[in-house]
Image (cartoon, rainbow, N blue to C red; front, side, top):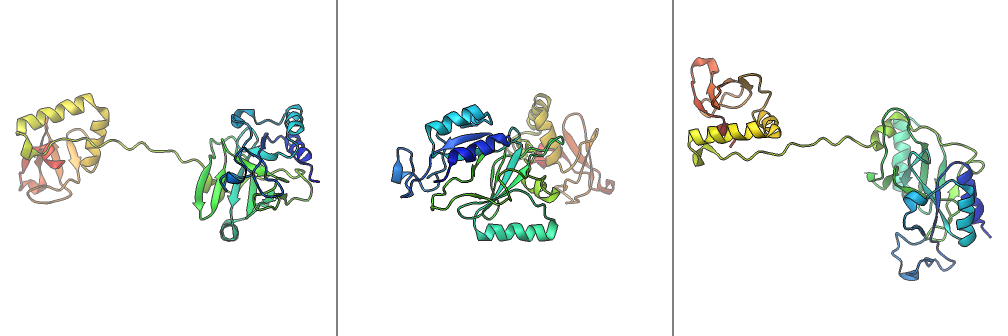
Length: 287
């Protein structure tokens, strides 16, 4: 008989934060209240504890209590900085082949591996000290997911919903610590800084406004809204420096690289070779 308690304690003693999961029985039914009606993707792998993110622990006495209460419970291993581990989940042969190809091309780091019901888990040491964060992500490549901060993976020897068991592929359980991932893999899975896109300001076209009213509206919006000022600069195609703007086609001569002279009332004057002389409000350039 497989000793799930022993497996959970091995994880905890290695510093991994664990929590109990519902398991599948010999008939591959989930032990949760839904039984055979449990959705396939959740069957035998969803947490018993509603607040598992905060409950997961490496405290041996707590783990003893849980597996004393549920001796056949599956083992959930919380990933993230507290467990000092993140996991690349390659689900299926195509995903495994992708990972092998990347390792051949960009460099391999041998680390802790787990055989899953359909593929492999590759465990890596949590990156430290350089501000890198790794969150859960799906589809970083076909069939390849990431389990990082706020996630969890299934630990051996939990039974997969297809009847096989998760199997640690190192020589002895948890004697080998996960290695640091290669730089190319860290760059692929790291949390990217999201750039806030300025909202587009809606300034009516010249045809709907008198030149004076358009100037007044433009001045009012730019005075009250710093984001609008930044957006206007981007819509004009470059940086507004003092009283000049660059790379906006002239409505008259269509020259795309003129310098506009922008006066204090919001008018722009095309200075292309000093021959065009088009003059109009900035709002007419934004439509």
